Image (tube, rainbow, N blue to C red):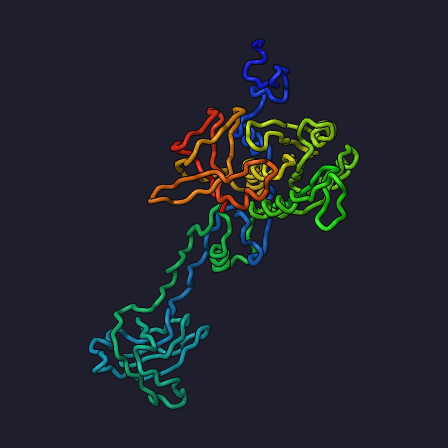
Length: 433
C-alpha cells in the first residue's frame, strides 16, 4: 500500500474506497467545532414576560427597586409590639385591643400603640409601631373589629414568637442594583417570576430557532399514506421534530423530498427563511444521495464524512445564510448525529454557550467490538449495582433498529483509538433521560 493510502480502509479484495479515508474524515470534536463556530445566534428582541419561559436572556437584568418594596406581613395574624408579649403563654395569654383590620393592598392609617394590635393579612404593609406578627393559630382570633366602636374587640395572644417574627423587610428578596438574571441564562419559570417582580413587562431574549425538517427518499412514505412495495414509513421526521423541541427549537416539518435534485432544490428553497434546515438521508455515496450534490451546486458544503458510529455519512453547509445539517437516513444514525451536532447548533442559535454534554463513568459488563476506527456511541442500559455504575449494550445495535433507543437509557462511548472494548473497562456514559 502506498503512503498516500495509509490509514485508509479497503475492501476485502484490497480495492481502495476514497470515502473510507480515515485521514480525510473529521473527528467528532472537529466536526462539532466547525458547525458551532460557523453558526451565529439569532438576534434577540423584546419578548412578553408571559411568553419568555425557556428562552435565553440576552443581557444582565439589574433591579432598580427593592423586592418586596415595603415591610409586610409574612402570615395572616396580628401585627403587634413585641414588647407587649413578654409574658404571653397558653396558660396566661396577653390580651390586646384590636384597633383595625388590614387586608393586603391596603395602606395602614393607624399606629400600633402599647397594648394594641391590628388584624393583618399576608402581604399587607406593616403598620407603624408594630414589629412582629403573631399567627392566628397562636391567638383566639375574635374576628374583624368594628371600626365605629373603638376598643370593642380584644385578642388573646398565647405565644411570644420573638421580635421581628413573620415580618418581611423591604428588599429582603432583592436589593436595588442587584443582578437578578445574567445574559445567557435560560429563563426558568422561577426566573420569569423574578423578572416580573422587578417590573419587566418584556425581557430582551433570544427567540427559539425555527427549524425546517425534511426527509428525503423515494422509498419513504408518510404514516397513514398508501405504501408501495419497497417503501418504508417516515419515522425520521417525527423523531427529529421531537429532538428539536427537546433542544429548545421550534420544529416545522416540510415533508418528504423525492430523490431528484429538482424536488430537493424546490423544498430547500421554500425553507430559506428558517433559522436551520435539517434533512435526513441523501448524504451518503449512493446514486440517489443528492442532498450534498444540491448543496454543492446551490450553496456551500463544509463536511460530509465524520469518524462517528453510527452516523458517518453527514453533511453540513449553508444555503444562502441558512445553515443546513444533513443527517444520515438510518434513524439511529440520525438520532446519534443529531445529539452530537444538531443540539449544539440549536443551542448556539438560541444564544447559549456550548458545553460538552455531561457524562457518567460506568464499568462495562461485557466485551464489545469497535471496528472502523470511529467513535462509537453504543445504545445501552446503565444502572447502579452495589454502589457502582455498570453498563451493558442493548441486544440489537443496527443503525436502522429504532426500537433499540426505546430500550436504552444511555449511550456509552467507545473511543476511536480502540478496536475492542473489554469487560471491566470504564467508559463514558451519556444518559438519555
